[in-house]
Length: 119
Ligand SMILES: Nc1ncnc2c1ncn2[C@@H]1O[C@H](COP(=O)(O)OP(=O)(O)O)[C@@H](O)[C@H]1O
Ligand SMILES: [Mg+2]
Image (cartoon, rainbow, N blue to C red; front, side, top):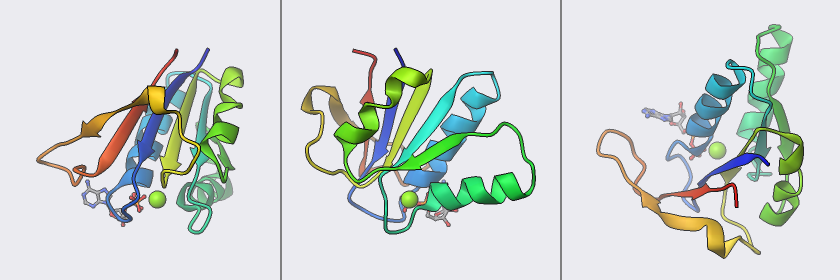
């Protein structure tokens, strides 16, 4: 069962993709099987980030896939140790896994939401 971390917000430019990539990269470097589910299909920031890493043969490689819906992304979790969801909140969303917004004075995280599992 994968650990699932959601870095999700309706607001753009608050650092969702950056934080998601940071978490994914650090755990992948410790030999976790990691996947980023990029829910921002309009920008696909993480998707393009992986392409740049592949072009430069950077390790570790991190699986990234684009999804239009959270429930579709969650189905892929069983194949990984960690699934990082990033992008806009979409419906249907897993209400039972949605926690309070994470806030930090040093980062612009006020509107970020953190979803954690495993169930
Ligand atoms: N902690 C931070 N401090 C300063 N700039 C940041 C920080 N986190 C992200 N950024 C920058 O802010 C911009 C938007 O970040 P991004 O992760 O793409 O946001 P989002 O995914 O929420 O739209 C990027 O240029 C990124 O490099
Ligand atoms: Mg983004």
